[in-house]
Length: 338
Ligand code: HEC
Ligand SMILES: [Cu+2]
Image 1 (cartoon, rainbow, N blue to C red):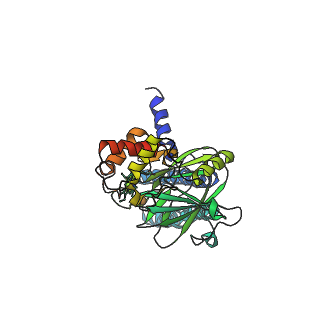
Image 2 (cartoon, rainbow, N blue to C red; image 1 turned 30 degrees about the vertical axis):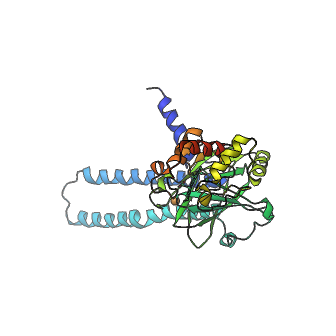
Image 3 (spheres, rainbow, N blue to C red; image 1 turned 120 degrees about the vertical axis):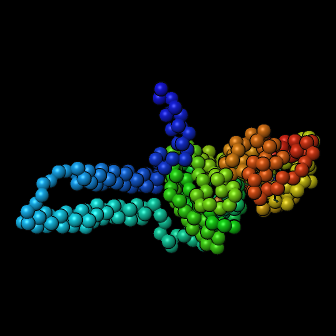
């Protein structure tokens, strides 16, 4: 077989691999992992070798003094293998683990209450876990610079990102293996983690704490891009939704505003103010739909709006029966929300 399948596999797992570190925090964790792998393998092989030796060696009967000597040797081996070796092996690992923890986690004093604005120079994103999607709010020292999106974190390359984690319902867990370890989102408290994306790219994240029927379809994407591109993106996200440019789009907007959608979804700049589902103001600018479940294309969008329950059974968006004309008008409108 050619090398192709392996290359394809690598490509497939790369966006969500802890072995492909995307920044300094992930590198520290990767280093610890590599040390544990090497030491663990060496200990396992050593133990198995001793075991094989003990099982297969041949020894004749011993007289009494030989027996005594063997007994004392046995005790020495037990002390060496059962006390000295574990201490010698585990102490450095403990120290390395503590150092890694210290290097990749925030001191508890910076795990601020969720409502505090960021400190000067701090880049804060608030992520709220919801069944089964992620509400994402970019905090700023000036309230008018804050904005909300969903299921996607865009960050400037090289910027240390503080993610404040909260939950609206049950416990979720925020995990981007290529950038950081896991951290729970617990109702009633705010946790925080930091990561830095050292180069432009995309990393897949995943809810890592079982949170209900659609837990497996609760993913998200971290996109890191150069600071100037991020600024331009943020400026677009802050703006209200693009108003309809022509009568057909105005009619399409009407179809959306007259459907039940507005009870649960917000489109800033329109009367839609719902809060039960993701903010749709700039839906068309996102890579995926329904928390990483579908690529954001017209076909998938239509399928989702027509029957979300067949795609994510048990998700909190009901399948609303829509006339085909209404359905296509709504999709047409949503596609203008870039
Ligand atoms: C009862 C509340 C509710 C109603 C009504 C509702 N939605 Fe949703 N919607 C949700 C929830 C909750 C989600 C997140 C589902 C998930 O990913 O698990 C969602 C997700 C979506 C998404 C994906 C957003 C993203 O960022 O990935 C789109 C698009 C959407 N809804 C459009 C609509 C449209 C159009 C209508 C009207 C026909 C509608 N919704 C009606 C609650 C609702
Ligand atoms: Cu979850």
